[in-house]
Image 1 (cartoon, rainbow, N blue to C red):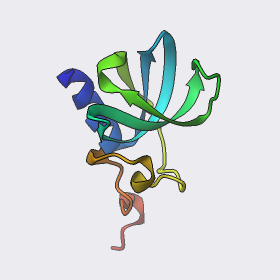
Image 2 (image 1 turned 45 degrees about the vertical axis):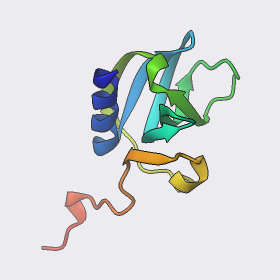
Image 3 (image 1 turned 180 degrees about the vertical axis):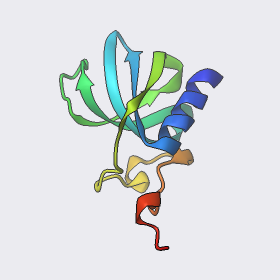
Image 4 (image 1 turned 180 degrees about the horizontal axis):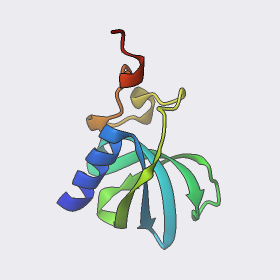
Length: 111
């Protein structure tokens, strides 16, 4: 599971879309944070594509890290933090990594 965590951390830090298999479905997700929810390490992300048991895509979802398989980062596809992302609304007892809400693009730094 450490490899899954490391990939998720890297994707969150660089705001890159990830692909993985979960409960029999291929998922395409914008990872916004991960941490502890109901005593399990879980990822909170916005699923933007592929399948889902509920059939509801796109939408916010939680994924237990222990059930994530075949995870990879799509280095060509970045995402911006979604305006409706609020870690407090997700009821995580501890957030281990989250997209930065005040991250500034290097292109826009004053000289």
